[in-house]
Image 1 (cartoon, protein in one colour):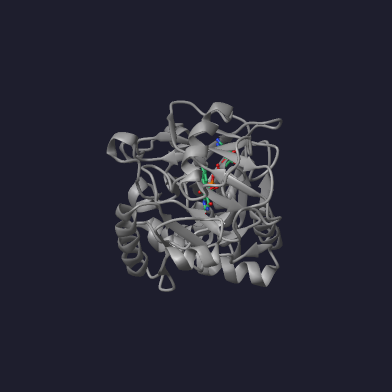
Image 2: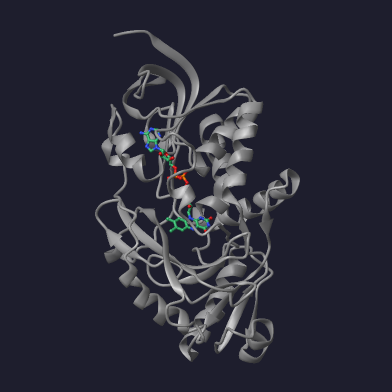
Length: 371
Ligand SMILES: Cc1cc2nc3c(=O)[nH]c(=O)nc-3n(C[C@H](O)[C@H](O)[C@H](O)COP(=O)(O)OP(=O)(O)OC[C@H]3O[C@@H](n4cnc5c(N)ncnc54)[C@H](O)[C@@H]3O)c2cc1C
């Protein structure tokens, strides 16, 4: 074997979560190297989402998703203000399209309050028509603390912090495999200059590939690697002006939050993501899926014109629970106690609200690894 590069902390994966973790460890004074397969950071799931700062309404109280979404949202708004990252606290309406759904909104309000989201309230159809004249419904839940963010500017800022604390990001460096040693982890990184690494701490933040990375590490107890499912979500963009100034959501569907209206920082409207359980990762958007979008959107925006939706992009949710079991599932964050090795941590199922929660996830990883 050739020379082995000895490193302190290695983070595998340069999406928004891996970058947040590397930033947190670097600020804590550790020497951090982040390895990323692709020629740029943030080009996988972190580029294929709704860019919504979620309030934390839906998740079961006590789940990591609930706790880290609410904590992450606060940190993210503070950070955006401090660092001048484009964002907007535009608010969101969850719209009930039937009496049955009104009862759901009442439950959702209680769920939000139990999660520590204390600024939500219900409005009737008259108030809804006053707030958003083009949107119709029996009632709506207003979430004032939901917002949107320029996620690429956020990731640039995380990178600036990593580099300011002497961390390094190495692109085109896929982790191909490794082995748990006593008190350290050996990793083989590929790319143009393959290298063998021995690291004192390794955090697997490889997103959709986190399962494969853990399975490639010799000595890791395979029973710690959870089940894996993929739920694809497609988006369609709207030709023309957005019908609302707030984000508009229907009541959720199994596996996702329902086909909702989101806005980007330029005010462009898009709808999605739907939910399609798939076996393999591919990102084509089938224009025929538009039929279901028209039907879903017209429940809350009846004036949507034929032909106004254009296929846009798709993202893939890394899931730990499949459709038969309801498609929910929590984030899985394994520190040394769970992986069974003092130097190895792994994150699985970091789907939505992973962007919102990224700073809180990073803080949790630091505590799991460094105490
Ligand atoms: C359709 C959809 C909509 C969403 N909407 C929202 C939203 O509105 N708000 C919100 O808060 N969250 C949202 N999310 C969730 C959010 O996008 C994710 O939680 C977040 O982007 C996950 O970041 P990550 O860093 O874990 O994964 P990724 O962004 O996928 O990053 C993982 C990185 O690891 C790299 N990698 C993989 N294997 C290796 C290897 N062997 N070696 C080195 N590098 C490797 C990959 O190239 C990739 O860059 C959404 C997700 C989806 C799918």
